[in-house]
Image (cartoon, rainbow, N blue to C red; front, side, top):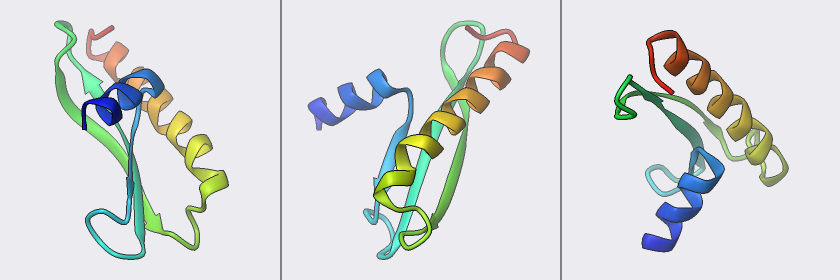
Length: 77
């Protein structure tokens, strides 16, 4: 678990690979306030058939960038 949390911090987004619901995947990133605290998040979920291995990193980067943009707009880092 600690290793996975570290990988999540490094890439800037979390990835759920059918852990909650069979056949579904999700990528998510935190929205941070001025203190660097997570106060919300942005995520994209979809069926595994549409969110395939090759798409996960690309979608994760998009979600991370969107969360970062919102964070900056509310005064976060």
